[in-house]
Amino acid sequence: MGAIADAWTWLSTGANWAGEDGVWHRLAEHLWFSSVCLALACVIALPVAMYLGHVGKGGALAVNLSNAGRAIPTLAVLVLLTLTPLGRHGDLPTIIALVLFAVPPLLTNAYVGMREVDRAVVEAARGMGMSARQVFLRVELPLAHPLIMTGLRSAAVQVVATATLAAMAGEGGLGRIITAGFNTYDTPQVVAGAVLVAALALLVEAVLAAAGRLLDPMRRRRQQSAAVPAKAAHPQGVGR
Image 1 (cartoon, rainbow, N blue to C red):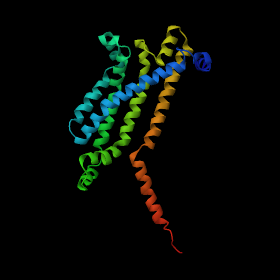
Image 2: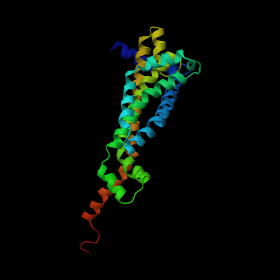
Image 3: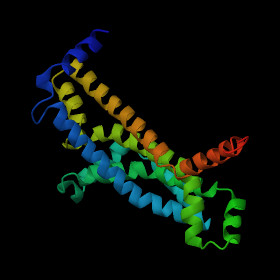
Image 4: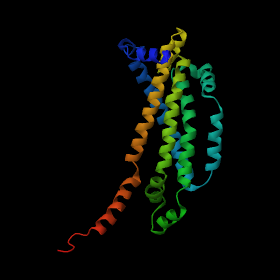
């Protein structure tokens, strides 16, 4: 309990939050790293997963190759990239390593979400005269939304937690607070840095979960479906 109390003291000290080495600056760096890496991973993984899920071909191979990449430690990839000519390009090795780490959950969940859409619903939509594009946008994508968001939340939390490794390559982020604590044998600072990373990961998870519910394309349809029986059960003008 002593380390936790000392970590709280460290966190409640205003001087530790100000300046280039302060929490606010490191938090901004951490969020920038995480946001860029997650956005790039989405641009790479989601279109591929959705297309393969839509056509129903090649998805299993892509998912297996993606999942195989999880066996490679992110730190090992980061170290190897840093030793290559890419290491002279600042943040690039860290960004590549984190993007590779974020792609598997995005690709897997998006593909599975597309493939688990009821084929009878898809065929019914086609029978109504919908084009392939309309089926994708109005049927498959809305029904796959929950699993896609699950993959996004998983990837985001993993990236936020793993972005601490950027400090190992001399970059910024909350990991610098932890490594600085190790270098000076300051255990409260190490614990405080770990607490900050964990709190940020939980906050990102909560925000994305709320966003997923608000942006769910099926949410309005379910509300409208629930409103119709309610109006039917209480017709206006009865008994007048």
